[in-house]
Image: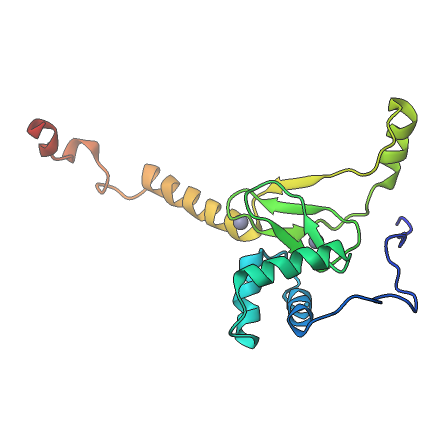
Length: 176
Ligand SMILES: [Zn+2]
Ligand SMILES: [Zn+2]
């Protein structure tokens, strides 16, 4: 495992000075931590408003933006159309389902060394990198397999049911 560097965290005695942690923001932060997924602002809003019925989606969204600017949470830069937030501020990779857009953490270490390697060979000062894994989540994979075995059993399977010789003539075609 690589060592985790915590340069971005300044949780010293002076931390939080001048930052007003409103009740709303605290609830939003706690909600995100409890969800432990990678929810969109809308998904956070749906849970937060059970506690704060008068809160608006816009307020939730603004607070999530502020929290990510403060380094309390992470705004994820992933493919797909949904903007997501992560309670975990450590650098880590994600897997995204290409079917349902579910996002999970990829259980592997962060590769700092690829950045240093590029630093040396390109003349760039590398400031970061993104890596996103794509695939089918267990749920969608199961559905896909079910569907495949279903069509398969229709092709080869039950006698008579799908016999092409018994197809009735298509009446719709003549009406055009
Ligand atoms: Zn899926
Ligand atoms: Zn994550």
